[in-house]
Length: 295
Image 1 (cartoon, one colour):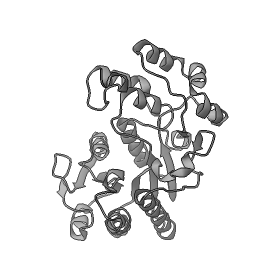
Image 2: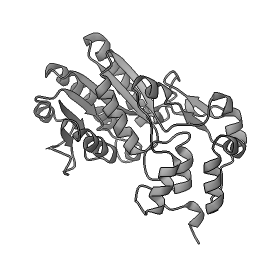
Image 3: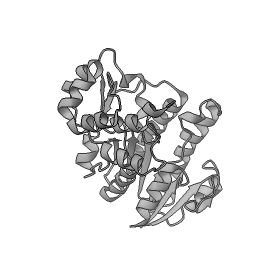
Image 4: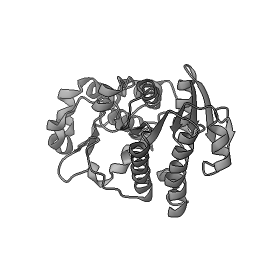
């Protein structure tokens, strides 16, 4: 099977490319030259897209403008890259006989809906987005466009909405693995499982770390997070106390990835322990503790 990964020079795209290459014939497309970019150029270049799609069975579409681009790129360019180019890619893929598209999206698009007043938000695929930025708006628009294409043309599309997946201070990153973060390696394996499952029609899944919380925790998580952590995740509390890291007063949201775990047979493997391990080993995936800043 041949797989095209767009955005293959990016941190997550590169991880997906390498993970898939253990099983499939993988080619990558990105505007940045690197070892995982077999086609170098703009995702908006139709000629390049047609070349990259030759002989491809599955497309993994990761290429996009993200939140850090907001102050540097116009709304028009955001729409061209994140929406228009996504639609063209899907239509070209269908015309070239591609059997399936997996779209890398983001839980960030839920925006204000993630943080209701007075309690932590419990976010599932049924939560109605309340977007904040052009980035959120374009990711929502791209998902909607792909759903329409999937339904009208009987083209299988799986959307994977990944939660926070970038280097942050170690204690923050560790906490987020229980609520709103995910390891890039787990993101890559979720894409692999989506390809293997090849679900018919249009499907959308949240991809986030495994949580010990449930909706009954939401009010206490927001108002007295430490008490919840001591009951639900005593190992994390022990690690924080041993290292002198401060526990948070509250958490504002939890992304529920149980649907992806169930329907994709996917299991996030890298919890808070892996964050601490990477930190201890000096990996650049994790930033230093904020409690050490200024010391």
